[in-house]
Length: 468
Image (cartoon, rainbow, N blue to C red):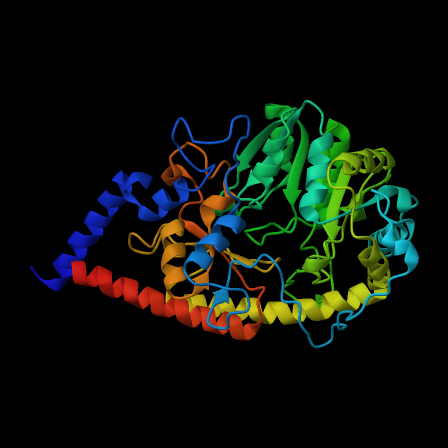
């Protein structure tokens, strides 16, 4: 048999294997199943009355990395699983505070809705950037300060009534777990297609509201993990639909400053659905954002919910029995950062810096043989389709394990699917051929990690060739 005939036969065999494979034949999938809360067995050993939720993507990924020798700050590793931007100096951006004043009042608990000064600063930021031509303006009563984005989503989830709640896949890894904690409502996912560039269009949302009886929709915009974006007329139409159909929109806008327009002269442009809200107290639109991504201060855990006054009042009540509110001294320290002119400047140079990193990573991936089919136009994530790879590295969870051997961390795609760790066959997930790569880390770490991925791919291909 000639080498060409061998290759042809091998390709046929690969296709057959892909059709019959299941997680039972995958060590990587069985390892995930062995973690508490991730079992597909009918019974687990556990303390009576205490359930164990499945691991979120971040927890599982970092736990497996540490088992392979990763420690934070280790220069030998490249963390492409990082869900945060680099926090160091960026040319053109203001340097971060190095000290925080501690007035005596800051020793006390802050109100569960946050201090009035910071709430007013958030309202003024939205009014200045997005609502200068609007008669209806946000005030401090439209803003609730929360200790992190997850806390914001949890407060919203705690207040949702007995309704159907829609969200779109792939989506931020923690959505499904957070939405499942509260039993009053039914979370209903809708899968977005690669052929449509994972786009959420108004027609789809209108159909989902009508066909599934959705009363509330949760969505990230810009989108995590696909890096796609809803903007301009489509955002305006979403507000109109929510108003007409009496369906509340909860928009996660944590990446609203990471926008990469075709024209670089537009650097500094940011996106928010608040631009299209007519009446801030009547339109059913809730926004969640904070210092975490756009201000590159993830460790501060200062975020906010913006919406109608009645929603903010509800969020205040939820905070009183959930987490008690955000850090008081850091709320005071955050106020000068929200100056609209400072924010515009930050966005401009942030986009210039991250655009260069995005373009570098996309080019290197293509050189390695990992072509990105739907490149990101926002965020700092790349949704990498592995279907062109030979088995077994065409599966996200296996690719993740192979990357760990080369000291690189990525996030398997199944963590962006509904119920990734529950009982259904993981090989049936529409996300199991994907991984998410972050270009949030500094350029030198990206270079090191891509070199390591290239090395790992070469070793995998070599081993596959030897088996032929």
